[in-house]
Length: 161
Image: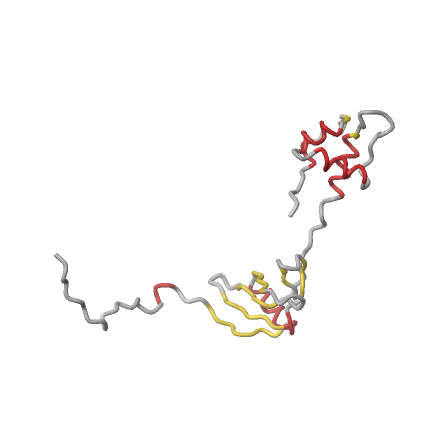
């Protein structure tokens, strides 16, 4: 996957050559040339080609993907990289100490597991929209079963010196 390039190292009122732009952004010169071919505005009539700092900032900001937010009935699928409704509109809930919980469902497109943390109010609203499966709270660790001591196994006699 490609590395994200930050526009913050570019100065708005400065002109950059391809070499200077690549050094300022920490990328290869071929990448800047490819950007010019695909739409980065540049003054290419003379050598070396000049890129206006303001145009470079605008180009890099336009490449930033829009933030995706999930609606109440959606979870973010990391495999699809988009918010999706759970398959069959079914989720499972694990209640947490603070009253909220973690919902888990399967992606309707790729069948990957999706998780989403919701508040207590959100749980009530989700129950109206989605089918909620097993609602169980995590028990405190001190109330769990004691560890197995393996006392049922006979001890072997020590035969070594």
